[in-house]
Length: 320
Image (cartoon, rainbow, N blue to C red; front, side):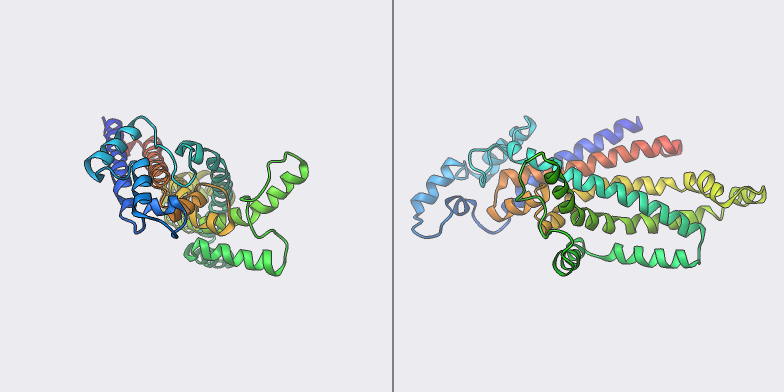
């Protein structure tokens, strides 16, 4: 019964997201038909009317366009892109998924591994130099806007030191040679580092707080009284009991960081969903924006659903 309630809530949320996705972008200033024509010179009202009729923008927004949009989404069909003329929305989005997943996935693995290790040892050695230094750096990383951090890394490592390329993969080829792969790795360092650093701070702070709280429990005192080593107490007793809030944060970040990669991809010209979002916004490409909005929002909903199910697995009291 508890699982059915969670599934029903997730389904209702997705429906609301689909409705919002239609209206929210049409509230933006600017006309997509002018973007489609491409030039403001010599544009007549007749030309604008022809473009609007071709793309169905001349029909009443509600209910005609709205009902047509809902029926298309229900079929998994988001229509054709305004900016990338002649291409379906799914064809436009498809090649951009892998770069974003690589960026987010690698950065999350680094952030989770480093953040949990630093946070666990900082909490266990509360008040030490390691704790003070790690917590201060984590707090600074947590408070940094990702776009600002990305630009700082670009200035330092690409402009001043000239160790790494300025741009990401947007203008890169498709060669499978070893040199090409190495260049891809070089161009991936700064974007991945930006996302990883920004995410690591959260994990450090949350894991440290959880370890400090759990370390006050009686079973930890008993374990230490039995002569169990500090590392064993941390690994066997503290970390397993501090994992619930960390699981929640990891689940939330896996959903939000996909949408949050927009600024990082724009800074580094990374050819993923984030950069595509910026391009679609500039062109007022409603079909692409609607599909991206659905992808970002539904990913958050589904990841939260998985987090709830995993939470119930780790602590059965949650589902009662």
